[in-house]
Structures are given as structure tokens and as C-alpha cells.
Picture 1: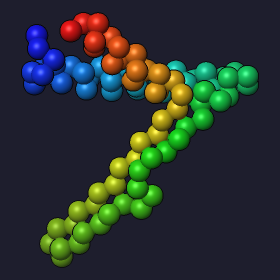
Picture 2 (picture 1 turned 90 degrees about the vertical axis):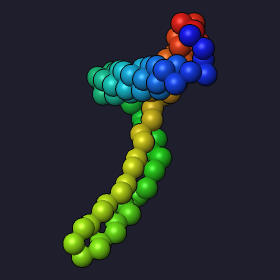
Picture 3 (picture 1 turned 180 degrees about the vertical axis):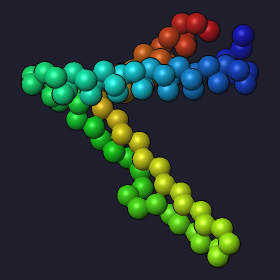
Picture 4 (picture 1 turned 120 degrees about the vertical axis):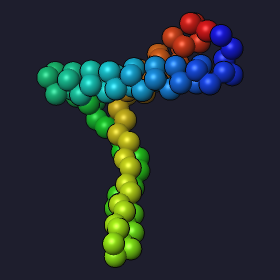
Length: 88
């Protein structure tokens, strides 16, 4: 399968998300349960602090997004990308 095909990008995105979530959960668990691994649970937040809100009277829209990364979630994303490159 070509890397430039649509399915290839879907697999890449899926692997990065799955491994990033798994790494983040592992980092949080290790950081909370082991004092000497506390730095693994430290998260860095990227995103909007206040949501963007549009009120049209009849409809109201609210948009906000935050990403919280820790060391193992970034490592998980890199591992997901590496696995994708090995598969294709």
C-alpha cells in the first residue's frame, strides 16, 4: 500500500492517537504511584484557555480544545509513527 493513499494516513493517525493515549495513561499511572517517577506524570497543556462562544439567539456554539501531553505520551506517538513506518 502506498504511503500517500488515504487509508495510509488514516492508519497513521489512528496509530499515533492510540499509542499517544496509551503512553499518556501509563505516564499518569507511573507518576501517581511512584514518587521517583513523578516527572512522568507532569503534563503540559496546549490549547485555548477560554472556549470560543457564538450566540445567535436561536443557536449557540461553543468551541474549545486542549491537548495535554506528558513525556510518555510523546514517546508513544513516536513509537506509533515508527511502527507505521515499519508496517508500510
